[in-house]
Structure formats: structure tokens, C-alpha cells
Image 1 (cartoon, rainbow over the protein chains, first blue to last red):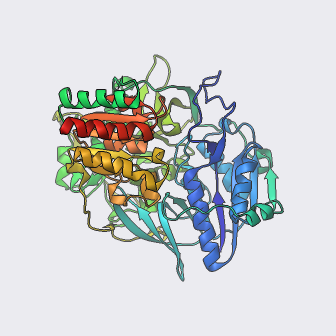
Image 2: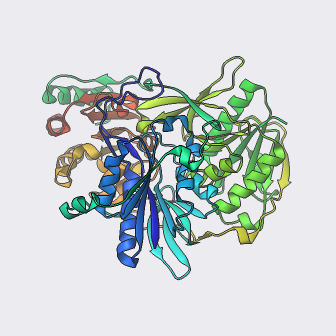
Image 3: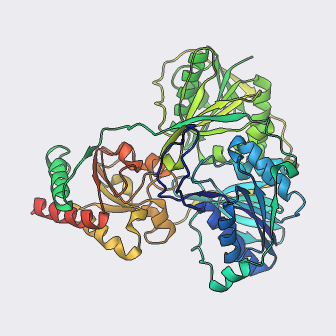
Length: 257
Length: 327
């Protein structure tokens, strides 16, 4: 099985949120980055399928040079090689523009399966994978927890709302967007980290993929810090003092304990 | 031909609440742009629900009917909706942000070389300019406004709870059957029947107090400190998704869009930052208490009471204070 996993590098979960001077995004000075969480689960599913059925796992990522760190992490965990679409101005592309880059970079790969996380933890559009499927004319299924290989293709477990699930069968090649939580994520081994240094990372520029930037159909205008929906009474003091104040409020104002 | 077209979902023999919220959003948008509203739903044209679409009456109710749509597939829905959007010439297409919409709507928009503006919480209109849509970034820590700059229809999905469903107001509507041309050979996915993994043994929705724990607890072994607080309060223990993903608590104790929706008298959010997916499951709680080390965590936007501090110090102190108050 040849599996491509699209991975995005995103700001770390606890990154300090300061709006940048253009009010288009957060100030990335001193911000650490990490592999997008559901993409990490997509990688894990891909590695397990390779272990069970053989084949190759190819990582696909787009972003500036710093994305190399996340790519090396994926290679250290066991991916075989990587395609890195290197660009400093991906913010000028909308989701369709980014999906076009990703699709163009892998169209000649003849993969059996393309996996992405279900959404990014930064922009949270939750669409890049599904758009890629449409661009590549592939069937897709979203919010997938489990993948089994069958004679004709794959059988997957899809998460629905409110604790409901569903099985689906798809022919391959197909694209799946992966929900977090099915497997425990592996750590890179020392051997893996060493081997990653020798693995192929093919760097390509958006221009090499024939991407034009003119076709943007949705534009992020500006970002602001959210305003509060409720007035929060912050209880201060030592932990014991704050706890005592809270219990008093819950007893005499909320009257629920 | 300009119009706002709202797609509704029928779930459990009802037009779903989130669909009615999307309809309210569609009406609000249409009013600000002086456009008519049409709605569409996959149903037999004689379906009794179509006559009872509540809220302000839409101009036309399109009943999309084809045997290939009796079971949901992304291929069937995205193609059927493409044909209807094309037929109506709608300028705005509004959808409820459900798991189903997330599955097919990006494909639908791509067929028009457009991008779905997903999970929208509101919109603003200004004189002489198109509307801008508000959505959340970085799991709720940032709001962003997006404008539509394409030449085709503008596709927007509406977050659960972002708009209030209109009260029924009566008015005449016309139900118009729409039979899309679909080809069984173009449907590749074979869906099975939905099922529940296991019988629910806890019903979080009936608990008067919930103590909910998130990533801030760091390790499974630390769960005992929140369990002690729950016991002292006579509360049920619940969690945000990462805790259940890690297998530290069973999935049935998960609150949020992929778990249960709850509205207890008191909801304690402990070490939970408050990602949108969690907030939609609990923001209807009567009283929300947040304990978090990060004063900028989005959970404080919905909390009534907050303690900014180390949960490993605050929670045991709170347990002691509750025990003292109850003794």
C-alpha cells in the first residue's frame, strides 16, 4: 500500500496569542510549532497500515522552511520520504489554493490512500482533505477512526454525532480525513531519528506546481481577540481563599450545592 | 435570480435545531441584503414536515428527492446540491455546520471553484460592501472575519448555537419537488447503518453537577484529584476529548460536539482550554466554573466564575472547601 499523509505544522497549543501588526494573524515571534494533532493520528494510522501490509508512507507538507522540523519528526517516526512545498506566503492562498498545491504535488504518485487530519488546530477550516479529493476525483470519507484493508478496497469506521458510528466501504484509491483518538501515538526512537537524516525530502516551490495566486475566492480580512459572552467573576487569593470564595458563591448565589 | 438558499437536515423525524438556526441566519443575511430566502431539504415532496418549516416562511421549499439520496453519501448529496444551486442561481448558500455538511460541503463548493466559509458564528454587513463572516481560529482563542471575493455563490456553514432559531410565524410557502439527475455508477462509497458503540451506562445530560477535566490534568494518575472533587460534590465526572482519546476515561464521558451535549446546574471545567468543539457541548450550562492556569483560555469567555491558577493546588483546596461547607 502506498499511502500519502498530508501534515500541517501549527503553533503550539499554549502559544501566546498576540495579534500581529497587520491584524491578519498572530505574531509568530518566539512561537513554537508542532505537528497538527489529527494529522499526527493520520500518520499513525498510515504507519500501522504499512506495518500490516507493507508499502510506503510519503509525507506531504506545505509551509516555510521551519516546517522541516515537523517533517523530520514524521520521518523519524517511520515515514519513508517527504514532499515539502516550500513557501513563505501560504497565507495568500485560500483553502482551495492550498489544496490545489497539495493535489498537484502528488498527482503522479499513484497512491492507494491519501490521509489528512480532519482539521487544523490553527485555521480549523476542516476542508483541505475533502477539497483535495474533489480535485483529484477520488472518493473520500471524513472523520475516520479505523481503516481495514479489504479485497476490493478499504472498510472504515466513521464517527458521527452524539456517540454514533458508521462503517463505510470505499474502493481505492481514496482519501480519508482522520479523527483523533483511535490509536496511541508512537514516539520516535533514537534509531528512527538517526535514520530520518538520510531520508529523501523533495523541496518544491508553488511556482513549480503551476500555482497562480490570483484566484483567491475567500479572504481573511482581519483577526481580533474574542469578546466575552458572559461576565466572569475571577476569584482571587491563595488557592484556599479562592476556593472558599467560590464555594460561597455556589452555595448562596447559584444555590446549587 | 439572486437569493439565499438554506439547506436543512431532517434528523429523528424533525428539522434539526441547528438547521433552524441556520435558517434564522439565512433570514438575517437575506434581510440585510434584501434577498428572498429559499430552503431545500432532502425529502419526499409530500413529507408532512415541509409544511411546518417554522420561523419566517421561506419563498420556496425545494424537496430534493431521488432514490439514490435515501441513504446519505457525499457523492449523492454534493452532486444533488450542485444541481439545485445551479438551478436556483443562489448567491448565498447557507448550511448547518453538522458532521454531514462537513463531509460534503467542501466538495460542493469546490465544484463551483468556491471555498466554504465554515463554522461561522456571525456576520456583519456594511453599506456598499458585501457581508463579512466571523469564524473562530486557534480553537476559539481568536476571531477572524472573512469576505467572499469569488464570482460564484458564497457558501457558508453556521455553528450550532450561533443564531437563535426563529419562532414559528406562519406565512405561505410553496413546496417544489426537485429531482436531481444522479448516476449510481458515480457513487463509490458504500455506507453501513449508523450504530452506537455500546449501551450508554452514564447519562451525563441528567447530572445536576458535572466536574469535567481536560488536558491540563497532564497524567492519568492525576485524575484522582478531580474524582475526589466530584465525589465531594455528588457530581458526575466528565471530560474533554483528549482525555477520552488517551483512554483515561471512557468515551461516553466525553462532552462536546463528538460526545454528549449537557446543561447541568453547575459545570466545572478543570484544565479545559475551551476549544469550540468542547464549548458547543456545554455552553448551555446554568453556571460555568473554570479553573485554568491560562487567563486567556477561551473557557473564561463563557465562564461565570473563574479561578486562574494551578489546578493541582486549586482543586484539592476546592474539595476541602466543599467538604467543609457540606459538613
